[in-house]
Image 1 (cartoon, helix red, strand yellow):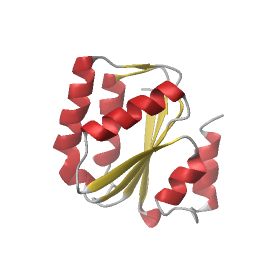
Image 2 (cartoon, helix red, strand yellow):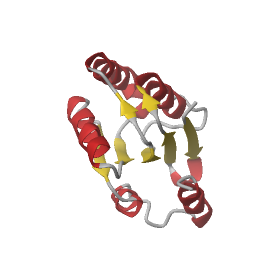
Image 3 (tube, helix red, strand yellow):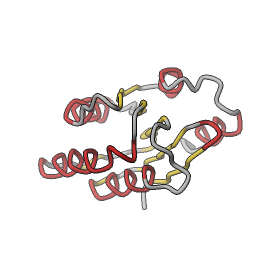
Length: 140
């Protein structure tokens, strides 16, 4: 399982950390793992940390599956924001494409190259230091 999902209720934040290589089933599993987590509440901010993804393997059918899954999980996501930290150029482009294809007026999505930018956009600049350290430690 090349992902880990954690929810920090006190921060109103869910974090999916992705490790590479990554295929569509892994990404769909992470989506369900985060948005169906017992501590997740609709409206929490979501942080998708792809800094450790080394390879992303997606085909045309895979993109359609991600779009369907996003629509199916929309009620669990609720309103709010989701930030994707994707430093590699190709992954950043793919993230932006997926964001465009899954556009929904209830939830804003944005791709970033740096964690600090993503946290600022999510309104999490004052993130608990222990949580922040755990994010930075996951990069290794």
